[in-house]
Image (cartoon, helix red, strand yellow):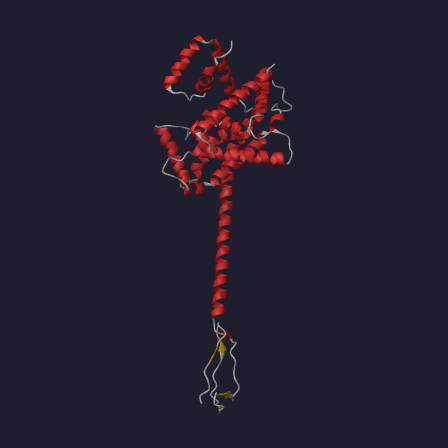
Length: 204
Length: 156
């Protein structure tokens, strides 16, 4: 599913304009208890949530489960949001991705507790498929990148994922992780440098 | 060629679209004549693109399944929550009713519950001056909550 095939009624729009207004209204409807509004928002953001939790799991099936878990947790947490909602517009996406990061982290913690295989050691190449050369190369890249991300400190992993998978601004990342915007920027810069260094070392 | 170390931060910020307009112009001007920084920027942009391409065919299948399953799952969850709330409300109401019933039962006088004590026809009540009262008019004595004996004393 590409972004263009997302729900036609709603697109992720930041800033101003009719679509942004519509998005804000959908968020308000969700806060007012509309299940349909939440389904629209969830459908719009589920790819991003999936991409974020995917960093914490080895298999697509697990990522799907965690995505569903994060979305259901968000749905159930609506009354809590209402309880501490300020005058400012509610940053739904940042809030949702914060839940996704927490769900992913908890899952990773459980994996460590049960001494299961770390995420970075698993290949993404599907069994039984004869992949063409380009696709094989792409899979190798994915595998290397995944392994490199796992080597980052947890905070840097979170920041880089929220920035590049979640496409959040640094201010939103700071809000989501409970750190300052500047701290998010610094973590991101360190993470990118380290990733480039790790991938550079491994490049053939 | 190596990138200029004092431009590294700004190049990364440029790749992340977090520079101000003025700084963007400065970076653009620098990139025009610095091959090392251009290569560095290309590397960073390639890394960011890799991030965008981390989902494979298996992931796409899961995303499609999520799209199908999300709404039914949400509905199931809502029904479960409603059921749980209903059960909790019924349990609470039953509990409150039980407490209220118990409370009112404890407040009832014993005779109202059939625990009254019928005294014998002749009651001898010793008075302070040693006189004895003999009366057939017998009152009914019952215990109140505080345990005090209450009743109609025999008329002298």
